[in-house]
Length: 292
Image 1 (cartoon, rainbow, N blue to C red):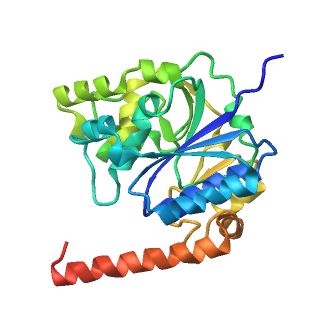
Image 2 (cartoon, one colour):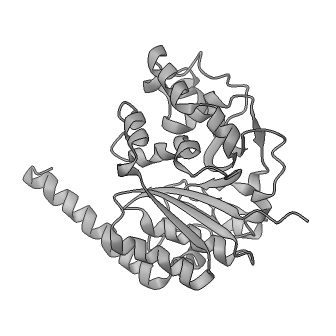
């Protein structure tokens, strides 16, 4: 009888988002009895003391944690050099485009999760889904027409079909060999040549163009966006806090707010709160004094 393959999970984040990354990782560990979990953490500028926090997952659950420093990855830096960014988002978001080249060979299937997610059901329910031969399996975005078409549903005319489907890339089940075979960096180069990069909603639009009509649609419960308190009465598997209210905020009115804090652990929750306040006031001070 063939051995059950380990469950590989990929997260991407920078040093300012390490605590939510820890929370979603620990939520996975707490929601399953399986311990053959392998976390692949793709990060940029993660401080050594933050790495120590992830060591606690190994100590508590016996899982594997692998670190990948993106600032040291020449291919990632090369691809990101000409990709659009804004003040809210970090180039680390593009790391999921290069999962097929960053991760070591021999891995067949991975789960990618945004760090603003929270897993409340055994992760193998997602990992064992039948992908029907597709490179990607994901949930349809609930605001897909707006995402595809933009302002007045006309901004991206010619790029997307508003009657077609469109997935949210915050939770993806990925067939890694097929994902790598799509040669995403080459497709990005074609977007540059065609002059459409500035029209795209970052990596999510890119992935939807690259895998158009070539992805498996998953049930909604695998990616419940902007979850409210009422969602606690529903059979959700993965929550995705895409709204303004986030569970790491002290008085956020979102689903599983109290559970989230205890999964993150109270010590890390309040340490992260202090980190965010310090960063907020430092940015304000630098703006007032004209510093960068």
